[in-house]
View 1 (tube, protein in one colour):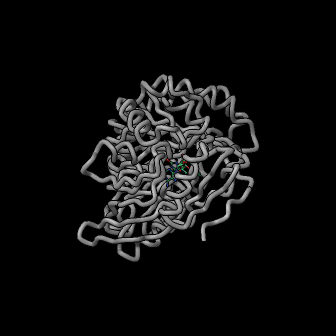
View 2 (tube, rainbow, N blue to C red; view 1 turned 90 degrees about the horizontal axis):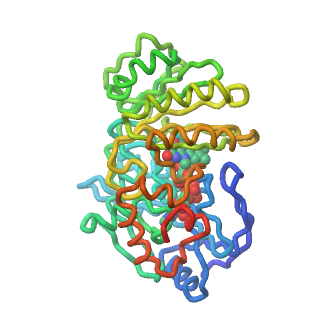
View 3 (cartoon, protein in one colour; view 1 turned 90 degrees about the vertical axis):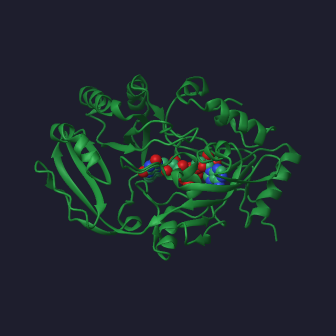
Length: 400
Ligand SMILES: Cc1cc2nc3c(=O)[nH]c(=O)nc-3n(C[C@H](O)[C@H](O)[C@H](O)COP(=O)(O)OP(=O)(O)OC[C@H]3O[C@@H](n4cnc5c(N)ncnc54)[C@H](O)[C@@H]3O)c2cc1C
């Protein structure tokens, strides 16, 4: 039977977004998703789909219908000849890793945690780090999407316009009920962590980025040291940087087992993606500002990562290899004035905000950052002419 609608208080991972939806729907299959869309259209209601609630901006807030796809999870097909799989959107990243390893397959990368649903992670351009590795939506070769009229679109590489719009789409084009994903053969990797002086890291940054499959670093404002995090296939011969000292024992295993971390301390985060070349200067400017102004109350580290360019219309790495820089603050401490002070530095270096994290931009300021913006907005109007997937926040950050 169709699930009963229930009223529940909803809040995101960090607790900074909380509301009571008018209704919560938890459909069991694609047809039930479609029926909710048809009902919403008939009743003039709005629907926001929610993943694992790890975004810290109000993407999913609605006092009409909030739909969780937590019951749509698992692997539904495997195509051994191409290493592609069909997977449901409510599968979380950890489950995806566990399902894929049974077929000797892997995602090409993960972010820092593995609790996000794949549907939610793709929708905001979630990424890990690696000079040649695109964000996670780079895996998508096709999807099934239900638009605002209740129509099902089977999108694949034969229509690159729709595919490049759908990969990172914030739930604004419609509800994705299935993905086809390009995976890679599973291989064991080794992850190493080292302490180093920040100057030594910055002097050898290009080599660190080019010489490792995955590389990122944390800078610690209090002691001005960096922690280098490096991950490579286990058989690669990678030299330890001479200036660095091991921070912990090497970890060996499959990517999904060792890359994601447990995060028990809750934080708020602002992250921007910058043109690759702008990364070092932007980081140094932020470091200087933090040391001068914020170090006495901000103990949280700053994270520096790299992401390969793609052609996805709303991907923050659209058409440019990118560096991402994240600033974090404990949820119990004041973060807004810190973020407000740092954000203009990101913007002066051509940054595009991470769609799932704190930022202050509106459509007017974001529009010029995305060359294929109008193409996305036109498709959005075609797929959802009545705006049933638009909440107040999306109306602020998109052209409607
Ligand atoms: C502790 C923590 C660690 C993080 N680490 C990283 C990291 O390493 N790298 C990084 O880039 N980001 C990171 N993030 C940000 C996070 O990955 C993104 O905010 C991501 O979108 C969250 O996924 P979710 O499943 O929680 O989706 P939600 O936050 O619940 O939703 C995100 C968006 O996806 C849409 N959506 C979800 N499912 C569908 C669907 N089936 N069809 C259409 N739209 C859909 C929603 O409508 C919403 O717009 C982190 C966040 C936290 C809290």
